[in-house]
Image (cartoon, rainbow over all chains, first blue to last red; front, top):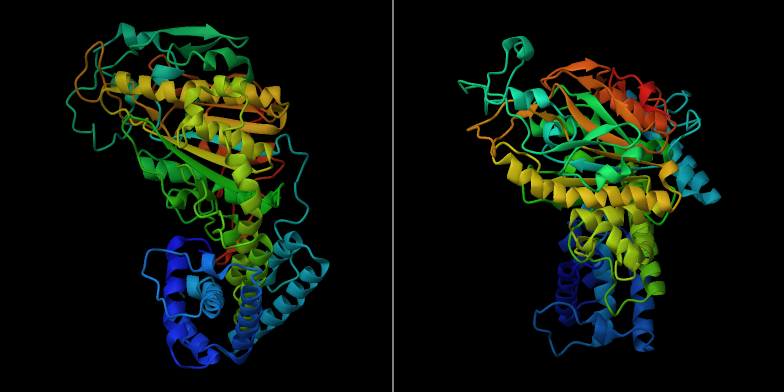
Length: 107
Length: 481
């Protein structure tokens, strides 16, 4: 699930779309969470994901991780207007949401 | 209802206490041993305390399952009488009203079919082996041929399921799951139960994941199937953008979130998922090394045959099985498909034997050379036998054989097994005349060799205790060295 190209591409495309929306980060993550897990994240969950996002954003901005490579997933045409560091950090957050037990398990 | 709700919250409290305790000690293994106890709600001892029950003779198992049921009459159980009586009717006194499958029940005649292949005796045990198994004939002194196996099922699916889980219906844990439940893993970087599939050119029968299912045991005990292609574990490699510390951080975040929902819902499957992500992370470093065949020395390749470098072949799987087993995988389950010789059996079995013979014998030699055979139990065999009478048209060169549950041959080697020949069948190769071994007896013996008492390795589910051998089975002392 973490390395499956389908999941990686889906994360990228969703992240690109969200990054272009004029909403707060919390709103973007809530939207992704609702789309994938079908419920709103709890305050604690949102906080965990927000912390992770900020940490990732810093790593991408300081070039400790490559945002460009993170964006290289799948064939769907990339949107040129995105901020690559922000989008890469959102990709990572969405990756986590896709890999939650609650996402994978139907019950 | 109120009682259930109170019980549920008690469980959650107990679970919280225990899971924190085990995390505090930092032992995932201890945690997983504690979990079976959590929902019992009594002070009763768990089925996995005090394991193993006695000193194990084998530490690991490699099971070379020959899926589709190879013909014992053309490989191991030499019956010259059938050649003498070629074409004559199977006497009713021999058949004794035995039920037949729908495939031959309507046949007007049941002409006896002698094997088209030559047989010779080998080794100290003077075991008979067909000319189809030249490599196996050279390792006979390591093998124990059980010629008196019998089963209750007459069709592939129930017979396979019976062999693997002790029940024909397919809702029970597989042997490998029972072993990893009872004995745990020797190598925390690899699953303790791995499954490898290969396919011959003969008439094939399916294999499906219920055969390596954990049944009602915790999902961490289910068999992990390696795929037969270039990459045995798909998507194991991280994308280029991912670094190891970064992957670690991500798995920790997922665990943190999963743990939040574990605390809220108390579903043990959530903690299983957390452990599986940990396992996947650890496998990322170990598996590529084990599955890389390019560094195998030339004599190993020669031993297993050139096919062992072609991913997905039986030979490649035998070599991979040795490497996994050597690395501490408790139970490696192979399935080789294509033994279902209803028609054109002589032609098909030739190809099948060619696939299986060299690599099976190579595995024995290889384990022995590495000093591992003593502690590794190797099993070779199918789910039932084949009939002594012909299915379809009989000629000297060509015949088919239907399913025969009343007797068949398997072999075992290493891990505390006494080499030789065990059990006998009658001159028609139809009924057992000496020392019958039921599938449950085989399973009880297998567990015994692993240091487990088949009557004590239990799991309580839906109000009763289950075991691999259900309510039957006895250890066959004659098979044990």
